Structures are given as C-alpha cells and as structure tokens.
Image (cartoon, rainbow, N blue to C red; front, side):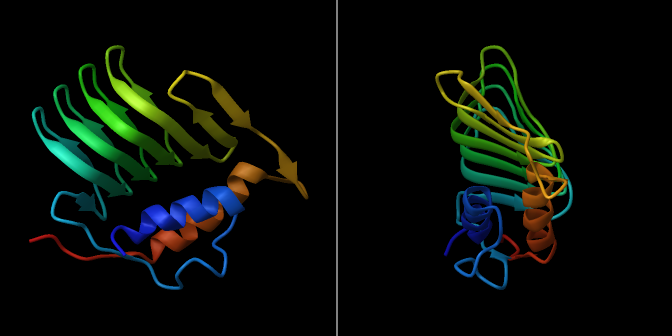
Length: 158
C-alpha cells in the first residue's frame, strides 16, 4: 500500500490509537510522484506538482506556484506560501499548518499536545481540547501516533 503512514495517521486520528487494523510495521513507500524525507525539511519548488509529500521530523514548505495533493509533517510544520496549493489535506502532528494569504488548501489537521484543530475548506474551525483520565486527548493521540511513526522505514527514492 502506497504511503502506509497516511493510512496510519487516519486510523490514529479517527480511533485515537493504532488499532489492530493498523499494520504492525510501518514502511513508507513513495510513489513516482511523491516526496518523502525521514529527517529534515522538504521544499516543493515553484511550478512543481506532487501527489503526496511527507516530512518525518521536518517541515514541509510548498512554494508559490507549486501544487501538492497532500502535505504531511510529522514533528514539524506545513508552510503553504501565497500562490501555492494543497488540493487535499495539510496535516501537522506536533506542529502547525501555516497558510499565507492567497494560498489554497482544502482542509487543515493539526494535532498537538494541547489538542486537535481541524479547519474545513469553508473556514469552519473545530478544536478539541479535552482530558481523559487526567491526560490531554490530543497528547494521548499524539503520543500513540508519534510512537508508531518513530519506527517507520522509508524506502529510498531513486
């Protein structure tokens, strides 16, 4: 399955944990039009079109004139500059999504120690800052997600 981490992140965000349905091992296998970096920042230059971009322990920056389908930063930020476009989701785990005026993004998902923040394409914002058994729900989800991501193996791109 291409970009299994995207599936894992979805499972964690929906269920709150890496459930039995999630794979025990994590392998990120980029497709021919994906960009994945295990440690460090990823820069998508002007004029470039990319399917999925993932930075594990880094920041994803989408420059003016670039277009990506999905941008994900695990332990980093997603920065979408004016004139750039993220056609689907911009997701930051333990980071923020920064959208410049004039940039386009369908939806934003931020998961941090203090909670979950969702922004829809219509601009509606939903924030969840709840506690369960004395622990922030956002922190519990984040801890589970990042523990799994820590073991991910990235298949090198040619």
